[in-house]
Length: 170
Image (cartoon, rainbow, N blue to C red):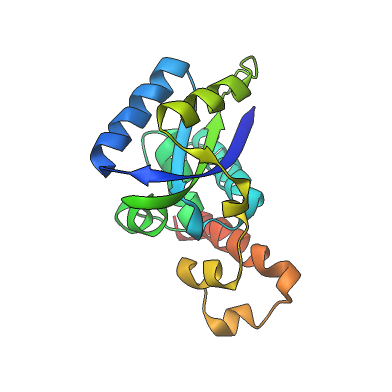
């Protein structure tokens, strides 16, 4: 079971926030990965990253040691964390956040966990931040010539293609 949310808030310190996320994840028995929502092109973007990351672990093709980091690689469309983290990792200051919560056992109701996360991190849920556009594609590194190859209603497919390409470049 998974849940994807968008939110707005303020990040004072990235390292402190990462540690707090790690502790929260452990305490609540969920896989949790947080992103800069300005680089995420909708719900399908993160679902695809999760599916690819899970498959990589199942097939022994994972690059990282944790599912959280593998999701990050796929969401960024990158093979290396040193490229993925600056690309899709959340930033300091006023931020738009995208978060994916995953619980493998399908026994845990994730809604209370999400609410606890929002409260603990002083975030305001806003799924509108997950809506991608042409600027999202450009920030992601997709060129104008690539963008011109598809109609606007297929923009998200360009991101999904980048995610699938991670398997090829591994």
